[in-house]
Image (cartoon, rainbow, N blue to C red; front, side, top):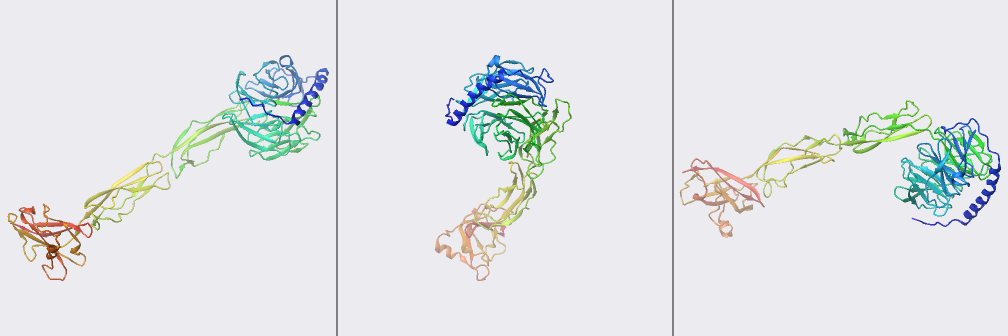
Length: 584
């Protein structure tokens, strides 16, 4: 994954100038008397400030700017510039050695114990640890890759990031543990996804260059030492504040304070180290305090402050709740998180929960912050489910209908209504056929919500009866006596009316009696058919249809008092007509 990046010519000249100047200043510093220590303490303390002062050395200061002692890595790593620093979880200090291409490890007593990592290509300048204890190192020159190491210093791979003017020299890792912010001594604050090996869009374009050290803030913004001043950017990358001290125009190093409200920055040329409040120090000459390292120009290249030990919050267990209003759930009992503060303070937790919780999964972030601004967060998943089927409120009542179309009856059967506690709308369907056949048909109504939960009702019954027609068995005969043993035929007249036009009857569909006897004559023959169109038994001027049936085929038996004829009318409408009979 090696990619040797070409450097800007002016940057190369600038680097050469630094190295030459470094050699001159190194001789001066090494020949100077050792700086005195004031109120020395033997172990790193909260709020202590560490300043890289070149020549393989780090100056260890108290939070008020008084010097504690000088940490010297030269016996392990050699001299040259000391640059960016970071603390691991055990508060051991890691110092990037810009010229000797290594990292010096210093224990909490200020004693160098060895080196960390290997394979640095050129000019390691900044270091940051992720939550798991792995380290990332930004490099200024040659490949300019960001290097990753496990907590033991074993290489985990390089990241071939895009550069601007000079390398990936100043880095900081976002709380998502994936987004690496970095500067490249130009106008840009750049980003790279170290989880997916993807170059991301630039975070910000600054109004001045070069940009040096950066530090991310809890609100998603960041601070950047931008030479002429220090800039604060919001989460959108917009500059919202600047900080400066008169006479300083080469702000280079940067670190956050331990209290959560302040930060430190150092001017590389003047060797001034100043503390600022994020809110009250905005503008010029509003710093909280400043001190000078006394090491001369181009010596201060890194800052670090012992971090405050943050509180730890553990979110409640994940919760599953039943949907209890349209679209979600209210009144969900989230439980109580566990908060542990190393300093024993009773810290109130907060969360970003907003009711109602929507159907599905919602991530609730629980947070806690101590009085020094150190914070922690943990997440809880609230899952809202819908396991309650809709309620069918009304189903239309059943009814009797008279056949009105081919095969039966077709028409409006009414509408059902339903409601659901979770979904604002419910799909209501039924299994009604397009045409209801003769007899009883049960209609099932079903209401289905968005989750596919269903409630059904099968109480509506549609009873379809044939279209009634008037008939006269054995016209002009009363009673209508039928000898079922006779070889004769029985005439049946289907009486026309204002609503029944017998010429619309399908003569092939006629069936008479229990056995469904068919006409004895071929009524499909036009001449025969016309002879069976009569006006009987009473002359009313309306045509009737008379058909004849063999008595032995009718299927009537002793005790029957009625006989019926069926057929279809006007394109298939079922009809039926019945008349009294006397069986012999």
